[in-house]
Image 1 (cartoon, helix red, strand yellow):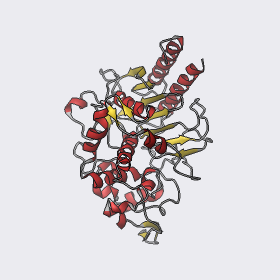
Image 2 (cartoon, rainbow, N blue to C red):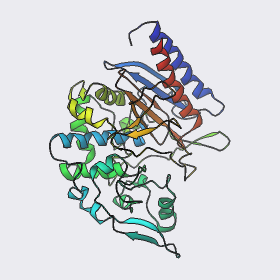
Image 3 (cartoon, one colour):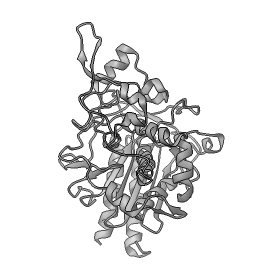
Image 4 (cartoon, rainbow, N blue to C red):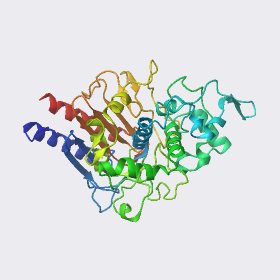
Length: 399
């Protein structure tokens, strides 16, 4: 996007979207949003404050709990190992993480409430993990996992413990798409192959060549000074700061599915790598042929489905583009048809629990990211603002 009237039109429209989000009847405290093309960031906006009622303005370098936007980074690390011949996506995943071979399938509950378990009918592979067909779920999106948590003490993934990963499968691998802790296990596959902690793998193999400096599994005092506060949305639309909310700074497991803290600017560098066939500002992260392979539909005839909000404080019922067919690549959701925002068929994207959203349009050479810190997921103001933001970009491209 050259510096033209087109750019000015989008900038004005985007600024207005951010402003509306922080001034809405049910506002967000603050938001950061950016758009990049293949060369660099072409829009950078911030509005509101890091904490509702606070004095610190939200700024482009504010730090966010990135939640599931972490997943694509973990998938990238796995793809690097595929390139090197160290990871076979279709080999049994227990080859790399023996604990995966010990997991059973949950076949319902007995009359006394005990989980009924059986052996899986097929091997679980890393491809299953990357495509969310491994059989894992989340307690805030799945009633059975929620029952395991409430009645049987299954720890939440937010604890970042080994115990929180030891959940049964909800179905035999490859049977359907279900969003869950698959990518946390994919991170364990990466660790099993490399012998290193996932954060160290990211730092050396992804963040350094991309020039990413403010993204980490372990929040330190330097980043904490720029941290955006988490907020809870009440049923009446009110917003309450969750001042004590922070993902543990001493995680037993680097959770490849949700554990990163970082800035939107850093994520722009990651998005640009995918726009540029695996090349970053400081080096090559993936080979072009790997990128081309990875972004295809890897679900076959299966489809991405709506996410049911089982724990209302954490998520509403949520879905991208209801009525639009959606598949999954290896790192991202794929919209099979043009989205209402103007995003073309075959584009990529996903989200994070605290209402963070991004997309990557390799055909047109644009990607964007919208970041807030609001629970539950699928917040009307934040999600709606994100869709307006993306729509404004495509309206400007259409001229």
